[in-house]
Image 1: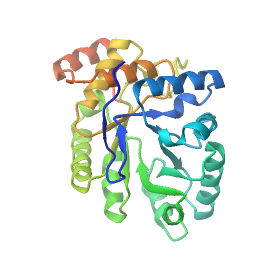
Image 2: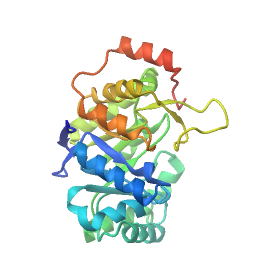
Image 3: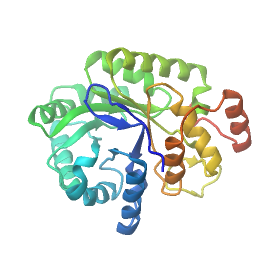
Length: 287
């Protein structure tokens, strides 16, 4: 079976697979399902896991892997609180759930709201604790993640104020057809290239918001479900040089994403993607 290519993950010294396992898919997973996912990750050579305390049982499921397989994975989790003491408590809980003494990357979750950012970066804000956790060896690196239309621009503003070690933002074909978003994403990508920061992307296999009230997948948006469509969407994002792709948080989509990432060679053309977007009724999730 082909394995997924790796790239240097910024200045961390780790070569991460370009497809990073998004453990939101384990939010409600059983132990048997979790074991099957671990086997799948090993089959494709995935060596980087992204999780968070807000992802249901995901940290617990990942924690079950760590006693035997900690050295096999670059392990990232998140902080989604604004205060120093809250962040300290949240990280300790995550370390307990993950059954580890430290993580490789600790990220401030969805740092795109300007008011929240001021609390995070104020004295005794959560950033103060992340910096301390890095000094104490509880995490090797600290980063930022973001959702929404303004994520790339907010990240650029934040990176002017603090030298984070990694960045994460949405990227898919439909979203990148929006001129303003594409321009800000490209500015962020260029900044990351110049500073040797790893740029992670999410929402690669997003189709649209749910047209009705009934959800068909674990994610808050409707992902693509056709295997060929998933493959094209994944490979289009991987066609952007040097970016990483965090897999969609749904177990039914995961195998097709990993297969597409492992088979990646040349991305589909924009003409082919426009036809796919028309057939699948793909729409941007943000405006």
